[in-house]
Image (tube, rainbow, N blue to C red):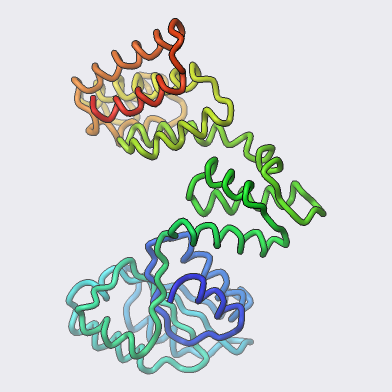
Amino acid sequence: MNYFTFKENIAKGTIGNLYLLLTREEFLAEDILQRLKKALVSEEAFNYQYLAEEKSSLRELEEAVSSPPFLGDKRLVVFQTTKMFREEQKEEEQHFLKILEDIPEFTCLIILAAQLDKRKKISQTFSKLGEVVELAPFRSWELEKWILHKVGELGKGLDRQGLQYLLEVVGKDLGLIGQELVKASLYVGGREKITQADLEVILSKQGEQNIFRFLDALGNKQTQEALVFLQNLLRLGEPPVKVLFMIHQQFRLLWQVKALAEKGYDKASIANKLQIKKIYPLEKALSRVDNFSWIQLERIMEAMLEADLKIKSSKESPKLILELLTLALEQK
């Protein structure tokens, strides 16, 4: 079963009492859980219970599943596991299967797992007891379908041009897309349809977010993602000189942090030495110091200087200069 089918079943009230959610897309898992809460327990805390494998025993899970609902008809129990469907745990598996076989009608048990090893006996047995729901990242057509569903739930429509523009600027982050659609629905007020023009107004502030996402991708050597964010930045009107300046800031900080870290300075000492008040950029830089050697950083600095001279003095397209720089950074 996929996300769309499960969502429709929840809306119809066709809900069983045992599901395994393969949570490769965390946003979709959270979305499904919120829908189940609303449908089964009206979000009442005393009929909803979340248990994590590393903090809760199977005995606690058994008790949670078998406890009758309080002032309601249903209980929703969520159990997150990292091992049960992947590693050999024979004694635990027997106890776990006994719990699954004896789920009372008033309980809906949702198991969250990142992976499922279909060769394991417990995985094969589960398919006879409950249903597996794949919450994988969307393919292109599924993402478009999800956006249109989301717009519909907000009581609005979205034309094709607006849909394409949204994807070009925001990318595939479901959380961000959802936030921008809510903003857009509020912006259009009583109008039924959201247009590209509406989204252009709403997303005009997206530039700053894209700059940080672009810099994150560069720092993590994710070249293709960086190119997408770069195109979005320039499309939203960010000056090429400003983009280059921020790239330079990123790698200058990385240079300084790497030098101090190799001398044995800890995070607090580095922050004090460089007079950094915001700790987040420092933590980002510290996480990337091993991604670049000193030779690579020297070449990157030279490439940025060359790009700066070209942007300011040549007739070459600034967009092309920045794209070539982004590609070059991967190879330095």
